[in-house]
Image 1 (cartoon, rainbow, N blue to C red):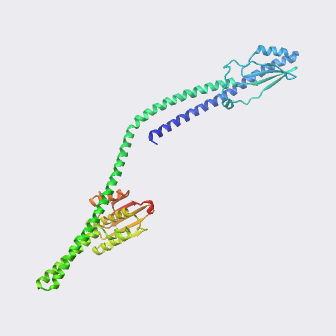
Image 2 (image 1 turned 180 degrees about the vertical axis):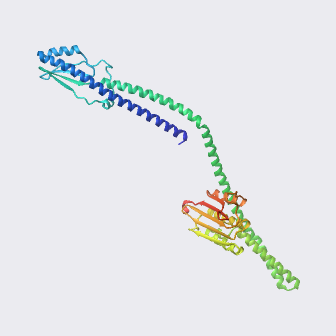
Image 3 (image 1 turned 30 degrees about the horizontal axis):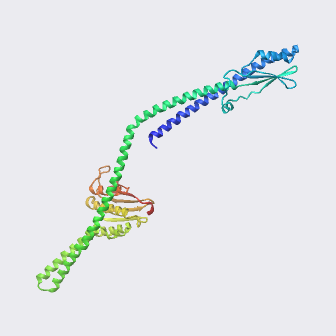
Length: 405
């Protein structure tokens, strides 16, 4: 639901609520007014006819005389007057009102406005007068007034709402443009993340290909050189040849070790079957062997064996790059890697006690940029900050797919 539609519905609801409240106040006011009016008219009518009845009793007038009096009196406002003889025969009934003749308010409105007034009976010699309060004309007036005000208010609310719609359209036009730009930017960001993910996948595939080529081609060539050198050494043709073959064998052995080290860095063998715990343990053993001067601590928490290839590679490469940065820039004596699996995310924190940047200072570098791009391509986040007690911290959080939990 758009912002404009929500505002329109809100304003329309407020206007209609105000109109309904105003109408109810009018109905309540009319009901009270009608109550007072009918009571007053009924009281005056009863007093007037009571006086006439008293006179009739004094002079012993026949009912016919009262009939003539009532006929001359005619219609009395807001009252129905009937004259009955003692045997129950209707001798007189007041004529209907000519005011708004033929019209009545709806039944539900009359029920809403109904007054609790009882008929009054006055006794006469040989007859009785029945006076019944009649609020139908007053209720009809109230209905006409309420209907007119409601329709007028409804028209006013409609005009006000249209004016407000035009105002909101003009007011929200820049907001809609900003929203469109935001949607476009979000879409571009998603596309950039997908491109980054594809690039990272391509890089990993190229690493795999290079490691395979180095292992299969260069590794076999170096092995062949060592075999030839060993063959020359066994032939024993001369002391110089034996020394040369030994030197060749030594250089080839060093080259073979270098090739295997490069192959492991390009694509650790443990990543062929994604298990982050095993990969990090292997990385830790290699780190301790190559850099014994740095105290390396690895802490693993949770099941890290079924994270999916993308998350496993991203976490491993980030830890690997962070350790490389520690070696290049920090001058640290201790580095600690903590990897923890949560229900729906993977968290990795790499701390060192080296010489990090000042707290609040800018942290940059191609390595960190590459790490951040790799993590954000999978919907995660990466932060690199200086530690309060000295050193540097890299924190990474990766979301995990629900089916891998």
